[in-house]
Length: 155
Image (cartoon, rainbow, N blue to C red; front, side):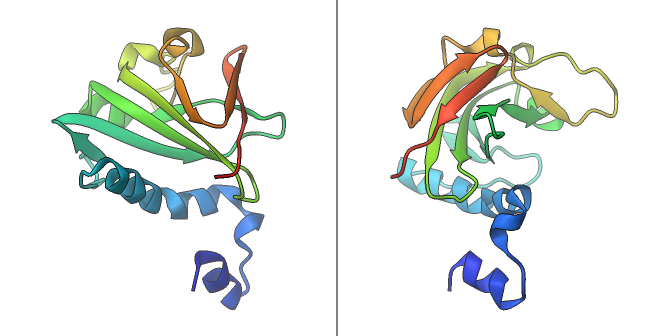
């Protein structure tokens, strides 16, 4: 039984809330990336999602806005715990039939916009800080303003 079948069994439509769908897929995403790299995935609070030769890799999953734009983000607590890490972002279409896979090596806190409030939990990647390092390994990426416009492709 897949996730959509399980949810629909209880009257919940996975596609009706993309954020919750992506949250549910987050651990699976981390695990499958780790398996493809031949490493283990931890992902417990305070630990990197995975380590490759001792180097932390953080995994994020999200969906673009209707204009195909997406602001890449992390959490301030993750940045503080791992001062330098690679980030991989999987960007799913709303119907989850296509995706883009981005890799951003050696991300540091200075690559993110400054915190505007002590209660701010999300950290937003500054496009200008990482544009030369972002590699789109699947799908098509265009940089526009402070966002990355993405055209996910089927596998």
